[in-house]
Image (cartoon, rainbow, N blue to C red; front, side, top):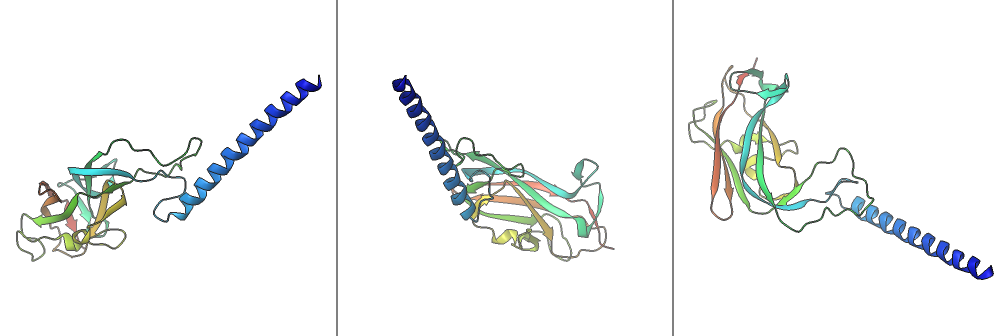
Length: 201
């Protein structure tokens, strides 16, 4: 009887030890994640990926369950110039989270993309006194106050990029552009677009 009790005690001790060890691993992982300022707590780490092209260029505001089109009229103050990258994830990656680690509902997958050279947005028709062929990427400002023309490092980023237009055109102008994505291997892709009519007053 005493022998059985000793066996059961050893089993319980071993199980408790394993549980405590696993909890310590989870707590350590949470501390490491929270100290990484580029990663939101509870979110997966960025995945390595290569950009392969531009998936779409689209315009804010988002109304009536759709983004604005070239036939719409929108307030300049609500207008946004947005684009989505087309990417290919690199193989053999893990999310950086341990089993049992819950992900925050607000998380979106982010990426580290190292093969982009630069992005330009070239006028295909005159706009706000600027001639055809002008690169207006310097007039497109992202939410973190960077100009599209300045983007060179793409670490911990979404595939979606938004920007506001830092110029006031004549009332009811439309922005006609060709957006280029240049890759470091010398290739480029582009998309032609026409914005909604921009109401300035």
